Image 1 (cartoon, rainbow, N blue to C red):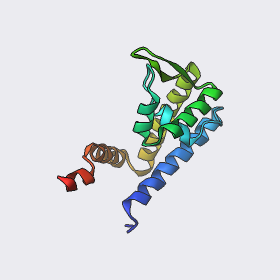
Image 2: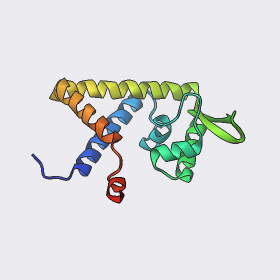
Image 3: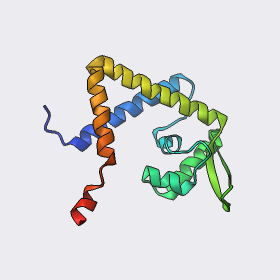
Image 4: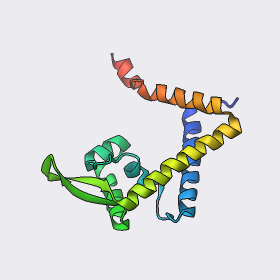
Length: 147
């Protein structure tokens, strides 16, 4: 057992998944898709999302996500449409091409999870998933210390 802190281990696993995802997307013809685009593809709702919501979900600045959206818009993966609830605001929505990439990425993630199950055991992958989901629902430790 390694005595490396958990955060670098999680980061290494995340990077390995991202690298594999982008290698497979490239093989499918989407070489221009970058890891930074994940904040949009992973956070956008089907009917569209406000830029501020995408930034909040990704824990990035609105300006950073705005640049990523502009890049994806130029590539034809997203479009900005009027927000039906606020005519001054815009929603970011995937184009049909963007939906295709999102669908492919989800399939690739499922394939990777299956492949991990074959390598280390389906039960261990299921336990990892369960543990990470449980941890993601816990309130931040900062809030607990402040109480």
